[in-house]
Amino acid sequence: MRKLGIVLLLFLAAAGCGTMRNSVQGTFRDPNMDFGQLQNVAVMPFVNLSRDTNAADRVRDVFMTLLLATHGVYAVPPGEVARGISRVGIANPTAPTTEEIKKFADIVKVDAVITGTVREYGEVRSGTTASNLVSVSLQMIEGQTGRVVWSASSTQGGVTSSDRLFGGGGEPMNIVTEKAVNDLLDKLFGQ
Image (cartoon, rainbow, N blue to C red; front, side, top):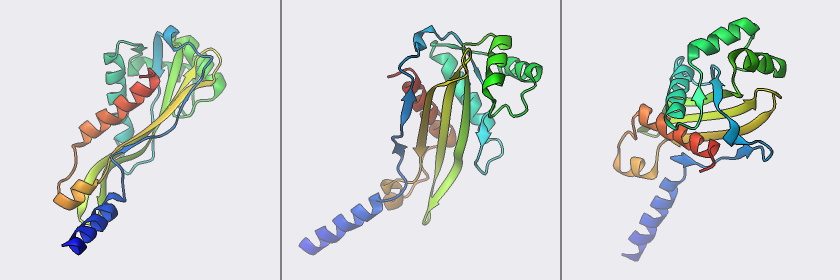
């Protein structure tokens, strides 16, 4: 009986190694920035490093919706962002230069610009078990100076020990994406 307990304990320990559902990652927050003064922000198109060609647009849409829902700042509509990108002539809106940020912020009348990267989006597998995963990094750039004042990452979803032991496909992609975005918003607003 004791051997069975040890075997079960070792099995559970080995099953626990692998993709984490919630990953704690670093956050940079400029101590000299008064985030309470931010009123209007622009969310630029995100870089997409995932296999899903629409992942960046989907995550950006969820981010903008949940950002507006906080009532903390106003996110300029995507059409206004596109108009500002066109007027400034930003060649790569996913990675604008400091000078492009300053011009863009002046034209669109925003206090800050948010850029982002979707590193992973979609299904991941571990053995015969599959689950959804999203990994996003964002940064906020002050409009007047062009300097990064906030940066954070979030990874949500993935295959857990219980998924491996008892089966299951994890949470739907929209729930995983909302969790990642809410985690980033908590880090932005310092909660």
